[in-house]
Amino acid sequence: MGNTSEKRKSYHAEFKEMVVELYQTGTPVKQICSEYGLSETTIYKWIRKQKPVKLDDGSSFTPEEFLNLQKELHRLKWFLFLPNGVSITGLIRKNCIDAPTRGRKKTCC
Image 1 (cartoon, rainbow, N blue to C red):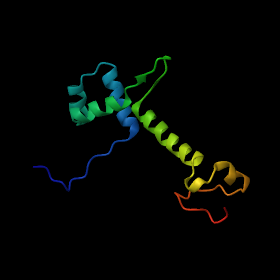
Image 2: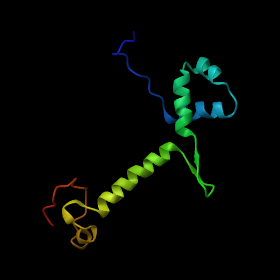
Image 3: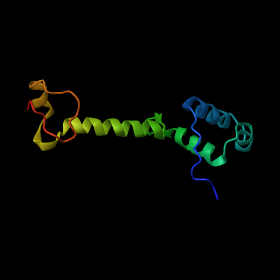
Image 4: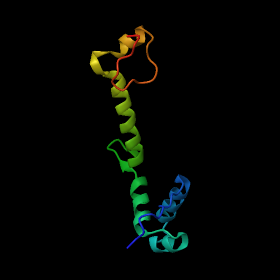
């Protein structure tokens, strides 16, 4: 049984990219595992996260880029559809825009 108090190793994005690049240039996963002390599961997870998804128009994006786009879309939707019927244009006209209030009414509006 594993010790649950053990800390998980954390790797920098550059290291993960290098490992994925080694795989993409033909280095066998087992060799990467033995050279860098990584598990196959970890390597395949990094490969999956960096594997581009191709679109019909020929462009592509990674799952991580897609997640970032989803987060940005959520932020934009929050500003476009503010709670309690407050519109973004009304806030702009009143110069009340600063940090999001997360559903609480602003005192100036």
